Length: 86
Image (tube, rainbow, N blue to C red):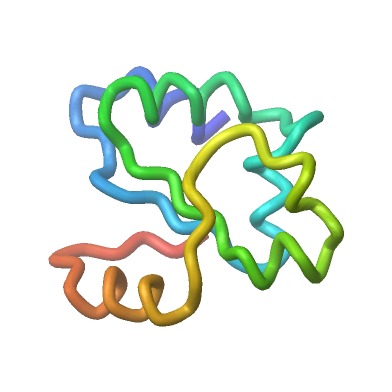
């Protein structure tokens, strides 16, 4: 998968932001949890949206990342040199 290949890459992202239903990837039963853990261990900042976690009732199931808000997400995306949207 893309996440596995990314976790094995020499060029890992500085930050990964998870919005909307993408927050499911940071919770228990995520098919990419091991890859995200490897990326985090290598220095990638994992940032799931707190409002999105609340909306889906997943906050208690979060296993990776630091919960963030839209103000921080907007700031990070506006200041990023490169952005990849999946």
